[in-house]
Length: 115
View 1 (cartoon, rainbow, N blue to C red):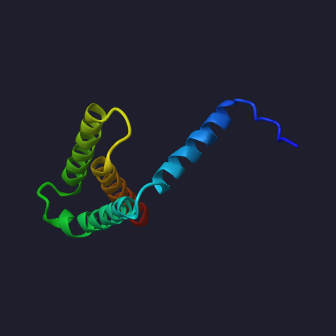
View 2 (view 1 turned 120 degrees about the vertical axis):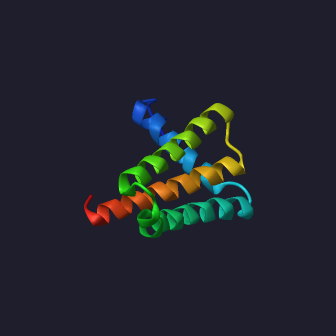
């Protein structure tokens, strides 16, 4: 007995795309997976240190620091969008995970401080 096929709704396409994205993250060699995971953790660690240690030393205080981080991250996103058309290589995935970890740490720190 065959299961009935699912309708091609927007939700079905979204769930298939999400499953493919997650499965794509799990494929590859252990070196690839560990490099991507380490980049995410190092980005989180760097984001925590940026908000704790570098912020008092930065000239201009918090607004200038936030502006510099946002400009740097936007430059990385724009550069990646222009250079990578298909599946990104390991280097770009590491850079993306560094960026995601950094943003997550800064947002988490802001949430903890209530600002």
